Image 1 (cartoon, rainbow, N blue to C red):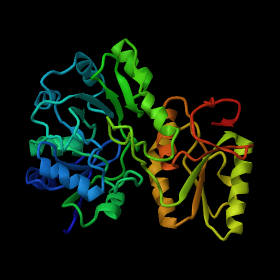
Image 2 (tube, rainbow, N blue to C red):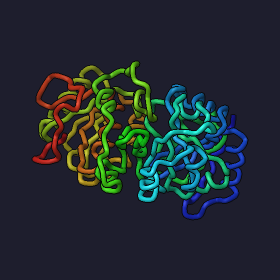
Image 3 (cartoon, rainbow, N blue to C red):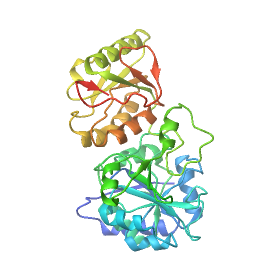
Length: 377
């Protein structure tokens, strides 16, 4: 299959290209498109064969549910028999935007789209190209990230091309995305809303709007204590069970005080160099100059957490291009988005976490580090 890539300015949408992409969606084909979070791989959510093509193109496990993208609030009534009151409140506050809600599905939504579950994940993206495609197609569009399953999510169209060229019909290229990590997922099927995946929309933001308690699913922590997939856990949301965002090289996170982290990473780099291996380091603007690796990349200033989130996957993919053997990264427990950033990094690292100053590897959140006192948590 020839994959056609069409470039456009998101402020001046190519309506002809949108119509062509919409035609492909209606005919059951796959189209990659930008959202404000990452690039998505879209198909008609109500067409089970089309949803099946997503799993095949990505190499994605069939029990990993897809997110249904809509363009109008009233489209919720196409996928559920009853919209929870909390969903209406959250939609008014955060849609269009990086929030996915899980609700009970109706009989029209194929189980191929929901990974066999009786619930459905849904969001309204905040990107003019995405909204135009959904509206023009007349379809609800199922769209996970447009990458090979397990690899870093795509934040640019060239990332999509690298993974899926020849496997999908079209890529709508509107340049780099704005946020750079996937949406927050909140489960509204129980009495207390529960976060299943952290993201740009935080627990505090959700509780402020709902004027009540929001929990974080204990399964997130339970899965983070294991390097391997937990065979006893059925994923309620995309990415809960499977390793995600991983570069080719082994990634290790190093936490602790800044000077200890720098010393430990430089020691590890020297050790790998003595073995003839190439090492990469993910640093910040404040620390980039003190590392002695083959490749050192700054993820941005430590005070600019949105830049850290936006550049994370780009940097992981850049190290793939550089063909390094190992990667060492500082940790980024920033005040608002730190939980989401570290969730992605820990999954990418397979939960390999070293505390600077010790020889042991830690595989849990047990010692939460604060963003104070010159610590790199």
